[in-house]
Length: 357
Image (cartoon, rainbow, N blue to C red; front, side):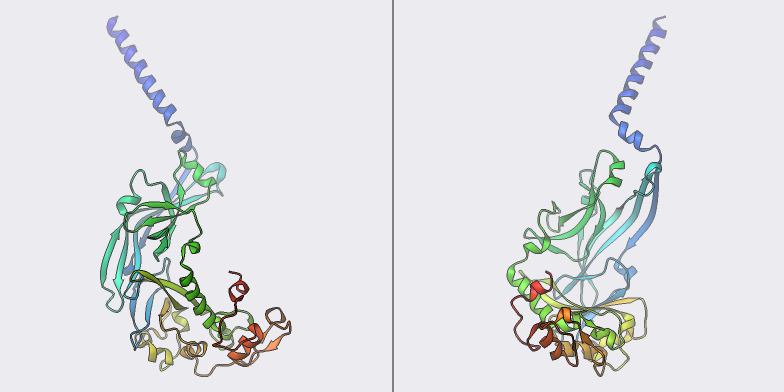
């Protein structure tokens, strides 16, 4: 009899323990009902991208070429470029009652930011992120990341996006991912509390604006057609960017285009960047020119075309200072009718406002 009571007592204790466990973890068990999970392998490495880099003939500028995949390789300073090697899987989860509401995030066994030298493409330095992002107390499920480090609150960080971890995994389908920053020295995590551009020193912003002003013609899409389309070329992006330079940030001009836009052999582009000619005629690559010595609009155009055609180009009345439409027969025409100045003149005080920035 005593033995039977003991068995009953043990059974009741086990039932209580099991019930308590189910109650404490009730959301975990509830979330299993109707749950679906899909996973795919993710391999983002420099080797997969077939990265090639080098210098201009005079050594002042740089180029990076790689297969057209995201994320792209990014410049870090005048000597190194960087790329986050991330290997793992992408997980997608959803539930029966909310089939259109899905959450997607990465789980990375290998996560490291690698620094490579221009020209030799030699690995110089590695920052291992694997341990920190896989730690139980890491506050995010990672949904995205940028390849180029940025300065946030005075620290060099990797900009990332992620879902804040919640008690119920099901809640991930109802929230938006947040931006956060991972300190590359201390590996601390900083939630975004200010817009990124607000932390830049004013002189760096001005330096970037001067690059944009100098390239306003080749970067604009106000004329019909724009200068690239008018010369039989697809989208070539001319913009400003910045890199770390010693103990400061340095702005530069960036020219971005697909390998299909590379000019014929013998073009001026290859006089400036001899290492690019081997990609002439190849498809599926992206090219980034890093111009510390920023050329003029005409010099940029002459990289790609021998004779610049303005035939048929117009600037609509909504984009001119006199409210009238004008034919554009030269680069100076564009600056005159758009801003009332000549190419090479000082940037108008309201230029940045006119850009909507």
